[in-house]
Image (cartoon, rainbow, N blue to C red; front, side, top):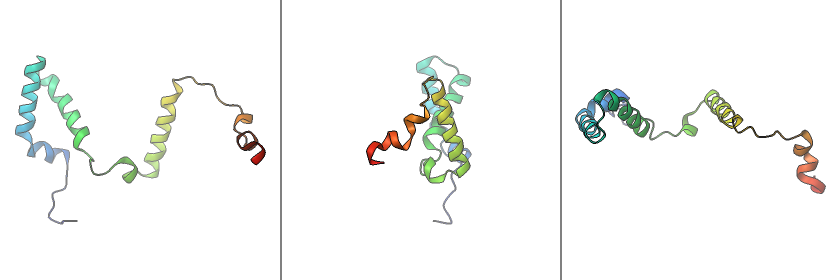
Length: 101
């Protein structure tokens, strides 16, 4: 790792690309007839999603607590489907492996 390399932060990114971000915001304002106050938060959110942690996917950096929280969130996202639960017999070793088990 290069000791002189600049550490990425969202603030550094915004400062370094201020003119380009402003140009994009102005273009979006013109073509959507939206105000700057409406465009800037959305543009910042999109840019942040696109550039923050590009090099580090979740699975490479997540702590056990983050994995647990992500799994619980995933489970909760399926509760709204209102699917029936399986009885214990359906997930027993005998029912899964049959005569092989």
